[in-house]
Image (cartoon, rainbow, N blue to C red):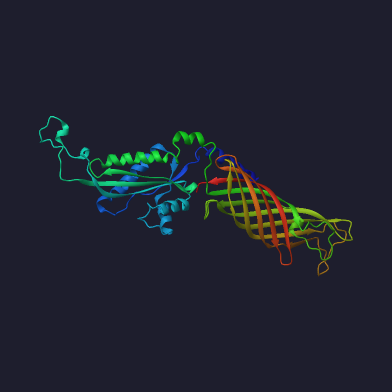
Length: 402
């Protein structure tokens, strides 16, 4: 009943939240930095960065990490705070922060010749034509701000474009900054969707959630060595592989760990099974049941193909605590204990480390919910033997934005 209720909650949540959690491209906008550290022009760092950010927000749909998050990542990975504009910093920060696009930039101030069109007018010099009012000043050069902009596509691990924009350090500077922002927005259109494009494509795109929770049910179908099919006698030993347990698991998966397609996972599993076995020199069978509780962790590689499908191999290690209970109620002659008392039931522990080699394939039903088919070869290492089973199962997973 509880499992059914939880599945219902997952289904309701995925349907109700999917319009709100539509896929958005992840964009990191690094501050445009004063490459020469000329204090006279430090104020432009914030002005250019803010203008570019506003223009991108006006034209595109995206989400950006919080400033404290990306700065913390940069500090932890020893990226110098005055070198965010470099090619290496852009690519690495984008990869570490799991971004789709990174935009970075820097500027320097150089002296360039003044053209006649940028010379000052003199209102005191009489002239019939405006062109005659041009003053031939002795100044032949002026400070020019050269801004370099880079746009990275992190998912494709490449620099999409790099360009320079020049502007004079005079009263027209802030108009030039606005023009720069327009140019950046134009170049970014290659990798960022506008609102119309985003709304048209979000039905087929899926949010790249890093955190996932899931519920699964599986059955032990094949045993290695084969399940016990002979009569139980003196010296016989029952193992979990002699049953075909039904297992219920709840798991957590964190994707994009260490590398974009690597994930780590952990799960808690409960299983139960029952069966009956023949007994030597008896016409009656005994009934037996198996219970297990295990905890495990593992890692895998996530491989996505087409738009809705994905697959992954998984390696899992953990520990299983279990017991096997034998009931002698049906026997006419029951075993006795050391005190000569008849025994009607006996419970044996079946604890062991485990290793699982598995794989699963998934189908994304909507933005947050996916259905998966699992298969796994699970080995249990007991003190005197190793047993294994092949499990097949189904799972439902849900992506979360934490």
